[in-house]
Image (tube, rainbow, N blue to C red; front, side, top):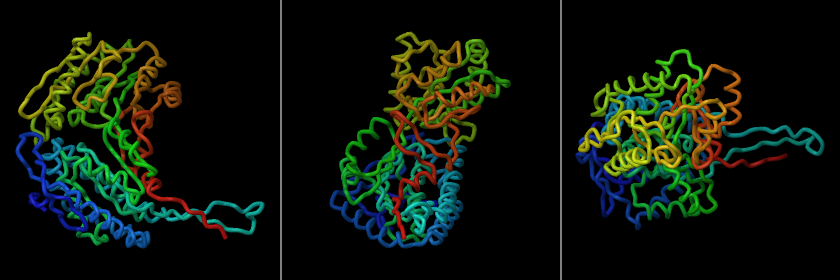
Length: 476
């Protein structure tokens, strides 16, 4: 698979489906053209749906052992191509190579977790052995919902797509995935790899299309589930168009960290610096807001800024770089605009605040303080290498600061106090609280998702499998 120039159109029914117009996919660092990828034409829409329907009718009859065996085989195939996919993700998504390698390793784990869970998700037996049910037996069958339509983002072009694909395959569904137009090649290459494994043709179809055609998938009643990962604004708007479909939304956030009593301040600051600036902050659970106990605030800021100075910025192929390019010129301009807007409204710039390399779309790691909720760097998801540091006087105040957001994905709390842990667990309004680590901590088996504007439902293999199935009671 060393040559990726072949991956230049939608992949439907195990073949490339060439269209009538195309988009350019760029290397996110040097802006060279990696490929021109054809867009799906409107007259090809029914071919996609029919392919997915036919695949589902065949695949739903595969037993759990067959599905599991195929998934384990798929994981092995991907592991053999790990180097190819790592370097492709590095180029196409601008992801630092060390982090791209980590993504591919997680992808293998995601598929293997799905293979394991596939064997244990077919039925359950509720106890009805009392009253009128004393002489009866009940079984609940978990049946696949049907065709799933997924939209995946640019920042984890393979693993976040696999959080839709692998659970679907584990339970017997077929799936259509529309990847980000910024990073379609990675998923097209994966689909070609999957076609060698032995799944029915069309069980996974990858469509590269304009938004208007994507909306047809969203509104089509033949599709049972819609799973979206991306921005809150887009996600909620798409849900409104989805009709009666089951919807799963994994959306954005402006993740916060509370720093209270810590023993090793240097280690904690190093963790938070990495959590703030890894992959240029282009992670849904990147640390964006840090609230530090006032009595340790000055010490924390000093150590934090020292750590920021050591960040490697530049070419993502360099193993020492964690702050590479942001996804495009528009993102670069927006990040800079939000930072300058905050400064003009009274925020104090502690470091950064400028574009390092305009040609390569690299923004300086930026630290602000003296911010307020009216600033976009605080209230919105910046999705860039920007973090705010603010002091607080009491732990309860820190929790209020975390909660003062329209988002609620994950939060980190550094504390050694069980009292504080209990209070944080009860009062912080997010989908997940990570103690003594940054909110960016994630394992692929974890239930992952948010509340408020941050989403609906949970990803994580077992949890997605639940949403991709319907329960049927059988009583006899």
